Image 1 (tube, rainbow, N blue to C red):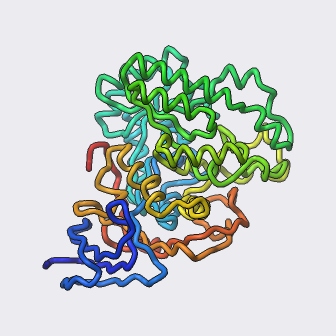
Image 2: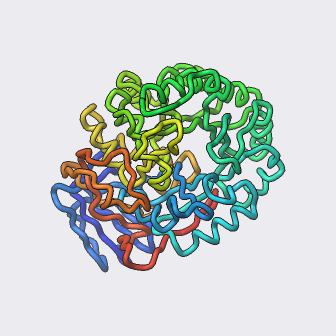
Image 3: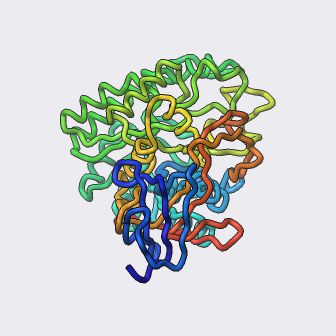
Length: 446
């Protein structure tokens, strides 16, 4: 073949649902061929991977709170996308809240895109939001290229992004059905949480008791019923409650168009190990017990859960109240965008899973969920977004070494296995000392 910009020879690569030796050929930012390891190819640049390295596709993280504009001191497109690239993530989809304004109108979307332009070291897409009163905005947002619509069934944590009632959820799903849109739901039931003991003080057990499993199950039941009635597509965000898996499986067996994700912190951390006062571990829904974590892994293994995403939800250290340790008052959210791949791989390998599984959960399936079928895989025609990963190399998490804007991390001091050595975006290595080359994506581009 001629006209090849880059040839990567990988003794180990995740290709076509298996790990194999391969030569990956890249031209004009796309994969144009996959050949034998020793194939004779004339290429402008040849890269040969070491024996301890595996070539992976760039991962796709569909749940990231960038927070810019409006709360850029929490994060921002420059810092978030640097962290993504360092963690082997080459595409992120930004959530519509915690920025000001929230992405609930086309004007707000345009403002966010204008701020992001020229700051992205990886490709960035955008979710829209469904809030009370913006039903007429959903179709225009869809036509402007958002990947779907996020809503809450209880207070979101920020007043400018109010939650939907049951009737409003039904209406949003019915409207989305008219253009085959996707509604993604923070599924916790407000009434159940209001009836639970309040989260007060330093005890993690007290915080866990304030967000009972029943809140997730009741809210998911509400989503299932509304999706069943409208025929719309719905997605459950950041599932932490393994008890909800049977009702999700049954809904799908009944023909309801329902998908579900979970997050690295629910799969690698457990309530029993969280010290009192350690508000860096606070998130909603909460990190639950060891047995619950085991059953979430079973849900991944049997396909009930198809995707793992970061739910990167950072804030300033001051908002975490680390000096006070009050779980009732501290901001809730885990900052983990840069560490998702090694955190999941560290746990997955101990449970007998392979890098093929990890790529499926964090790359291929996440890409397919949002219609970006040209990424999250090493295949002819796919974007040449690639990662050199050393799966046996361990490191201890130093929060000061991360690209996240604020030095707050639930993984600080943990030893993780697997390091990202190189990330290619569009066939070119990401160099955060150079100009950013990430693109702003619209739905339907792949």
